[in-house]
Amino acid sequence: PKLPTVVDLLATFYNDGEAAISSLNFLVAVPKSQKLQILPPSSQNIAVGVSATQVVRVSNPTRSPIRLRMKLTYQSGDQHVDNMFDFSGFPASIV
Image (tube, rainbow, N blue to C red; front, side):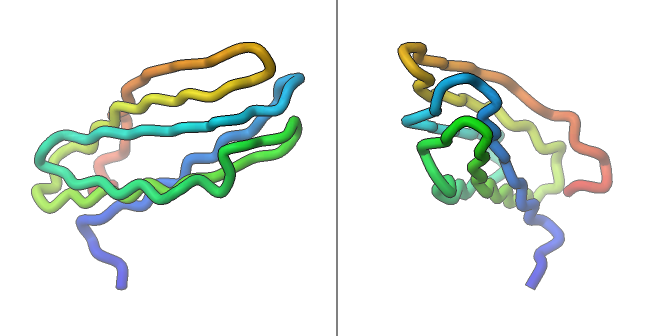
């Protein structure tokens, strides 16, 4: 059953580069008032022109604004990519 204080987010990683992606790792953190469940990605290796997905579930019993701190790392050819970013732009209708 759908819980009004739980939000499921679907992250989609699409490889539009020139080399395959390997060792995909997506980490997420939320404030202490929220709980997080990260399901495994559909694949950690993404060929050119292919996508992978990962579900992130946020439980927010206090209904405070959802804030995500994310870290994405992967290998593409000889290049190691390591990015961190924040997101808090959810509409008010989202928990």
